[in-house]
Image 1 (tube, rainbow, N blue to C red):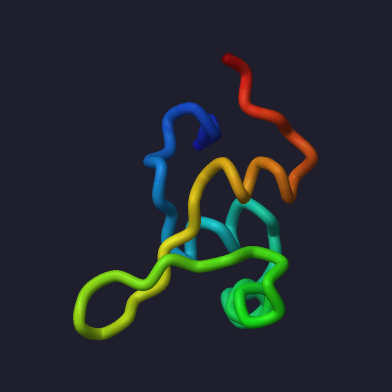
Image 2: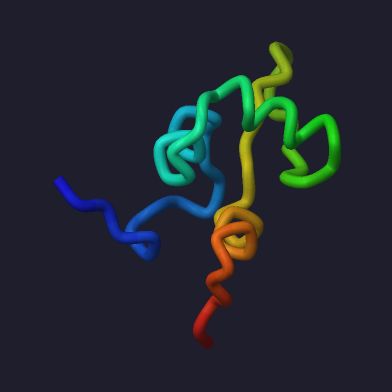
Length: 65
């Protein structure tokens, strides 16, 4: 099943980002700590979410308007 970036929600989970970038979830966490891919913390557990536009920028894709 092929997933289009346009079909994804604006906030992505660690697993979704890791799958898109073909790296491990731990790598995504490390990139968040280093500032390469900033995370948004949600809920009382502090779950991480990542902005789709930041992931696209990391992939070298710009959002078409």
